[in-house]
Amino acid sequence: MKVGIIGSGGREHAICESLKKSSKINEIFCFPGNAGTAHIATNININLQDFEILKNFIIEKKINLVVVGPEKPLVEGLVDYLKKYEINVFGPNKIASQLEGSKIFTKQLCKKFNIPTAEFGIFQNKEEANKFIEKTNFPLVVKADNLASGKGVYICENLTEAYAAVEEIFKGKFGKAENLLIEEYLKGEEMSFFTIHDGKKFKDFSTAQDHKRVLEGDKGKNTGGMGAYSPSRLISDELKKKIIDRIIKPTLEGLSELGTEYQGFLYTGLMIVKNEPYLIEYNVRMGDPECQTILPKLKTDLFEILNACCNQKLNEINIEWSKKKSLCIVVCSKGYPETIQKNIELKNLDKIKFDKNNFMFHAGTKKENNKTYAISGRVLNFISLSDDFATARKNIISNISKLNWTGGFYRKDIGHKVIDK
Ligand code: AMP
Ligand code: GLY
Image (cartoon, rainbow, N blue to C red; front, side):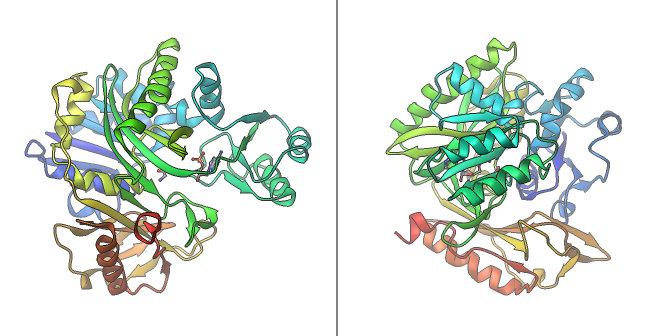
């Protein structure tokens, strides 16, 4: 079988590696992939905005299954487009992808179905938003409605920060803003809860804890994710039941009222407050870097799972997991999540010795003339599987020190809530 993976991050490299393990797969294409996927797949550099070129390539190469990694093509309707040409594709359709594409869509669904979430208001202009802010308690959260790679969220401690957030969003920092969201700040511990859906049935797909802030101690700006560990220390059967009954099932009911169903990975971003789950956001894909911690624990053939989902036969698959603890640290270019320097060479990659429990996925890298360059904010993901999180983190830090890359930085405290209690 041939598979195609859309995307170029650490998540897509992890998906590629998992699919490579399947005895059913003999060829992998990545659109466009990175320097890591280049070792195990054919990277195809085509413009992902141009669905027609992509579709023609998939048909010409007779690709049996296409997996869409990132949110942008999902929100733009790539799945609907490819399905029109009878291409087997794993991921949610355009309507269902609104769960991530519009925070306001999700908040309104929460309101209608009584899904626990932070109190919120929607504002169409700066004046209205500022008037509200002046009467509200701090901290509060200001959010752009549209996709912003995890960066369109401001946790504001005071009026000055809140005014600045409103100003930046309405000035178009995250694309044209017709409205923004102001939310109550939920104080608790975050958890990423994953499910996999075939349109009719769904199963859980493990949990993780991301670290969104750029600096150690969970300080500084929000990022796409600086590191993760799996499973989350918070998960229990009781909590899982609450999440499924109060959040996921009503959401699927809401989609069904809109005449659609959900197929793909669903990432439920939660704040757990005194063992009660509150929905912070949905993402219509695997998390990045959560995926890099979860897939290496998967014992079942990923191709069989995804293929079963495309045929609405997920109930015939038993998904099995390793009991190991998994941790990932993201190495970023200096300056991330703000301005970074691009095209800095990574010189010491071949000095690091990896093994089956200690390895690396590439994210923002490219290969040119046999050299590897960092080309975006999040560059490399180091992963370790171990019997405990502390050992996993120690192994990773030892590997990153061999990289000795002066152009980058990383958080040494990933997993602090579970390791350094
Ligand atoms: P989002 O893109 O909506 O997931 O927000 C990014 C991050 O901001 C989340 O992962 C949380 O760390 C934080 N955040 C978002 N909304 C809230 C909230 N209402 N209360 C507390 N923290 C929040
Ligand atoms: N790790 C956060 C995300 O994938 O959105």
